[in-house]
Length: 611
Ligand code: AGP
Image 1 (tube, rainbow, N blue to C red):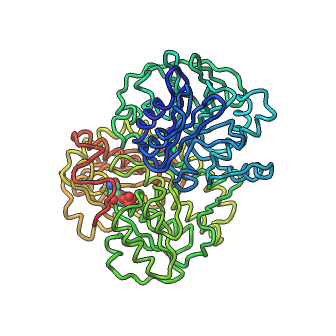
Image 2: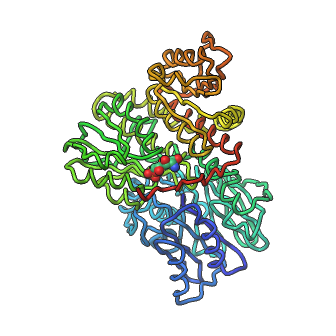
Image 3: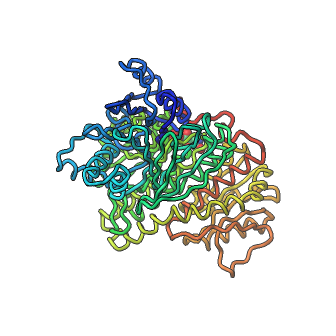
């Protein structure tokens, strides 16, 4: 996620902005910049890479940047590669406005075309530069900057947290939020705006969390809020924050992992942003332009990313109509695979730096087939090495255990299945429209369900924490989720857990079942339940305790060995997105109960860049 900091006050702005950007570094970034209102100009200082490069630019600046107000930004690239031109802040053509932005403007292409027709020039690949020039254009017919700002934002679709500097109001900063967080800090003779309060916690603990659709104007002495649509002034209630910096970076959550689990609704929205239009029933993946329909798919990945591929394969076949094989990268790289010209190799990696996956990319690249990278980090080795790349736009994932990245990978793979299904005629327009509507509503369902899941899981997590061995059972896509549940529990709580295709139990593993051998069965109402219910009864009949994640009808009868954990209801075909956080929170609470280091489990690295 990008980081925003804005300052209006009695101190020289540059040092305050740089300190704020340093506090936001944990969010991950690939370029940074600040803009200062200095007498007759807005001066921008930007640099790719780390903040040290920006500091060099500032120290080399001809004039001492003593402005009392300014805006700053650390960029996590979504549109446009990480370089100085694409770094924020962005200036409008007349250099009277500077803007920093966190989020995605979904309709920026249409806006850019219109502005280009009006004579505007664009130098970067970003959606932000389009927005700041739209503000310039709107200012021509608006009575003031606030009205111009709002009129421009009402034309933007998507997610934005913004801070705007106007040359003719050098002491003021305007800010607005829609589907991306923004917080105001109230000081003595100085005020702040930032993506999260760590950026200014050293100066004030009095904050206002902007609500959806709110716009703010700060100056050194005052702060005013208004409704983005109506411009009606809004009252606000400031809060006093006790957090230290570390907990502020975690947004008040105890661990980054928990924060990232709860970010999944926003991650789902981010993955779909600009790609689906549920009202029109349309889906667009411009990243695939020029790619002919593959005759078969080969997904290659490691760990959780491999589980994403396992989970998606049935969808790519049933919805997409394309045969799909999934391989572990460390095996694929040594197997000398036979890859046809009409085969597409999809490499999945959150970090884009996993050694085995990059080696698999090299093997695939040695064949005539195209390669597609599905990754979260712009400019990563996978993103640069694959012929095509689709970004999951999940924002930086700090915790070693991958959570929100998997959610975004599943979302993108679902879109791929629907894309090829629609293209191949297997998913007719009406069905596509229904599925996209269901998909678009999933984030709200998740947002509503997560708090109750987090409450219900605790006693079940204690049982898992106290178990010596655990089976995770599932059928179909739930077998892949069972693999992920077992991996999470192993890597976080160090309890031995194994995933098994439920139908395989009678071919040997059921011999292990005993009262001290816990089974966790994934049994959502997805057409497999009758079969897995009988697998559950086979385990129960041998005295094995079971935790069942399901929503059985009232007639289903299970013995006392079975503890039911109800799955929140959600549209058919999307239960994986609700089961996933249940499994993640089970492992999170088990590890917490055992006092393990949740964000940094022993022996593990966030990115396995060696064999
Ligand atoms: C996930 O919880 C693990 N930490 C690990 O399995 C991870 O998914 C794997 O190393 C792959 O990483 P990548 O997605 O960055 O390639």
